[in-house]
Image 1 (cartoon, rainbow, N blue to C red):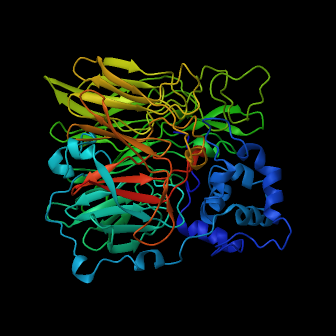
Image 2 (image 1 turned 180 degrees about the horizontal axis):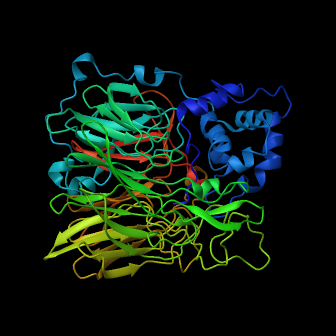
Image 3 (image 1 turned 90 degrees about the vertical axis):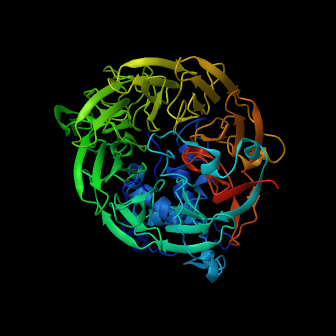
Length: 637
C-alpha cells in the first residue's frame, strides 16, 4: 500500500540490539538540556525538518508532532532497517542516537506495571472457550463480510444507536493501534502490538485474565480457530519479524511458531485466516520503502499467499503474485543494476469458499516493470493446490514506490534513480487493493467484491473473475478511496472513502451503499470535518483528515464506521440515516491507570462481541492523530 512502516522488516531483538549499540537501551525520557539545545535537534533540523515540519496534505510523512509520540524503538527501526534507512545511511551512529533521543516519546511503564494493577480477581481469570467465537478474524467470517447478527454481537440496531463508554485500556509505548481482537464468550483477546503483548481481557470490565509477552510485536489482527480436528483452540497472528505464531487461547502459551515467507525481508502485515485444516497467510513485500535508497538494486520482492497446516504450521504451498525478479539488463542513473518484475504485496486478510475449495485474495501495486498482470488485482486460488484459478486486474501498469512521484513527473522534476521506469508507461498511482475481497452469495449469484484506493468498488463473478459491475466514488489517491476494506449486510455493500487532502469537488470522503444484486447505488453520506472547540488542536489535520479509512462493521441493521478524525458514526444500513456519532479523539480515564488518549481510527476497524463494541483509537502514521486506547462501549441502560 505504500505505507510508512517504522518497524518493517525488523524484529524486536534486532531493533533492541541497534538501540543497545547506540547507548539508547531503556531510553525513557528526553535528554536533559541544562539550558542548551539537545544535539539531536541540530540533526533533525538539518536532515529531517524539511519533510516533517510541514508535510504535504494527505502525504505519508508523519508530522513532527507525530514523531514526538513514537517510541525510541520505532524511530531507530525506521532509520536503520525501515523505510527511512536512506536517511539513516547518511548518518553516523552518534547522529542516529542523538536524533532518536531528541524525538522519542517518554516510554510508558516498564515491564508489566501497566498490567499488574488491572488483573482480574483470581476467581474471574478463567477463560471459557465453550462459547462460539463472535468472529474468526479480521473479516468476522470466512467470507470477509464484516457482518454480525444481533446474536453474535450481543446487541441490536437500537442498542448501536444508544452507546456509552464502559471502559478504556491504555497501551504503553503506543502511538497507533493496528489490530482487531477476537471475542469468545466473556473474553476479549487483543494484540497489543507496539506494547509487545497478547492480552486476554474481561469483555465487561477490561481487567486482565492473562497477558503474555510476544516473541516479536504482533503486526495485525488475530485469527481464531482449532489447530487440527482435535487440537486446542488457538489465536494466530503474524509479526514484524515475519513469523506466524499460534498461542493457546487458554493461557497464551506458544504452541508453534513458523516462518512461512519466501522472502525474509518482509513482515507479515495482513491477518491470517483459518480455512478448514489449514491457515492462509498473506505476505506483503519490502521494496516500496527500500527503493528510496539510491544504491538499492530495485526491485526484487513480491507478495504471496502461503498455506500452512493448522496442526503444526508446516508449509503446504505458496502462491506467488509473480515469478522471481531477474536483472532487466539496464542500470539506473546511479549505475546500479535494476531488477523486475516486483511488487503486488498482499496487505489484507483473504476470504475463502470452503465448499468450492477456493481462496480469494487482493494485491497491491508493482514496484518495478514489467507488469506481470497480477498487480492491483482480485485473485482466485485453488485451496488444495495453491494454483491460480483466475486473475482480475483492475488497473494495469500501476508501478510505483516511495522514491516515485504520484502521477506523471512534472517537466524538469528531479526523480530518484530507482524510479527508473517513470515516463515509460507506468501510471504511478499506488491504487492498490488495501482491503481483502468479500465473497457474496445471493439470487443465484456468487460475487467477489473489492474496494480499491482509486475510489472504485468492483464486483466480479466468483467462478470466472469476469466483471459484473463497477462504481467509482471520487478519483481516489495513494491514501484515499477505499483503504482498508468494505462490509455487507447481505443486501448492500458499504464502501468507506477516506480521500485525505483531495481537493473539492473530487473529494468523495464518506460512506456509500451499493445494492449488490443490481449494482445500483442505494444511498450515500458525505463526511464533513468537525473542528469545533478543542478538536482543532486535538485532531491532526482536522480540516482534511475526516474521511472513513478503517473498514466498517455491520451489526444487525446498523453500519458502524470509524473516521480519520477519531469519530465513529452509526448508520441505519437500509437507508443511510445517521443514528449516532461518538468522538474517541479525547483523553480517557483508563482501567489500568496510565494516561490514555484516542486519535485516528484507521487500519483496525471496530469489532464486537458479548454485548460490547470495541474501538481501537489512535493511528499516528501518515501525519494522523496518535492515540493509545482500546475503548469499549455498551448499550445505555
